[in-house]
Image (tube, rainbow, N blue to C red):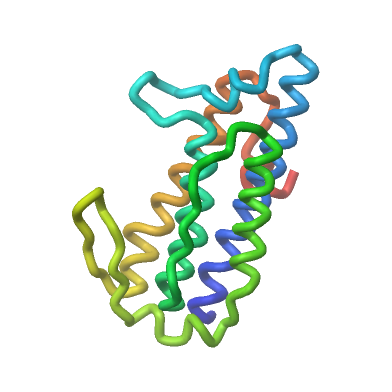
Length: 167
């Protein structure tokens, strides 16, 4: 299996499922007469990031991780979304961006150095395989799963199959 095949499809699958979760969350709000902002700003705990930020970060980890692995310019994506539609558009743009990569861009990426930020003024360098396993995938799946959990916690009728995109 190529490094491309191990990354781009995995990111794309979950970003696509997050789009489906947004659709179900919006339908839930309409059916239950809930203002969308209630879900969009929902947090599991007061010091955790809100739902909208979880979607933004999942999107960022997918796109920026692939850019780093392909050693192309990392996209800058301002966090301006405030609605389900804007979040869907962000996910669609990220999916299109991922689909623009070619397998050849990932050749040898598992052994190349990847430098990435670990805070506002710090960064770390890991080999591509270590970067994917220790940073990119864990962060991506954390934010995607947290978004799913926030929706379920707020009554949206979704399950694991929705998260996996096979519902």
